[in-house]
Image (cartoon, rainbow, N blue to C red; front, side):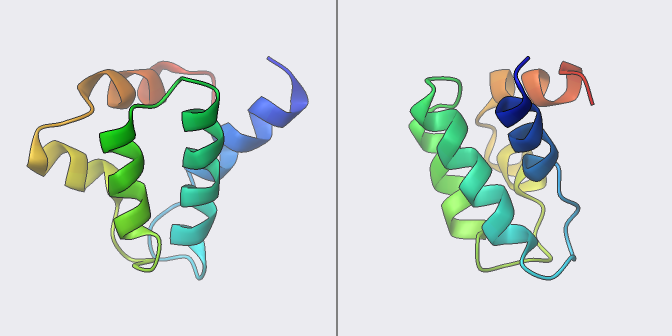
Amino acid sequence: MDEESRHQWELIRTPAGVEWSGRARYAAAMYFYQKGIMAADVLEVYRICSRLDAEDPLSVLRRWKIGEDWIEKLETTVK
């Protein structure tokens, strides 16, 4: 994994509640979307949550029952 990808994986895992975390996660989500790693519906959840620092996009994905492949990839990719 290259340095940029590793950095984006760190950003997408920014914990909920950290100031500007929603925007950081959305920026990383856009990176993964542009690389073809993330589906458009999952990116939309990150967009919606981008202004809600306290909202965990993974919780939203689970509630809405979408993005199972993304959740699995996020949970199994090297941390």
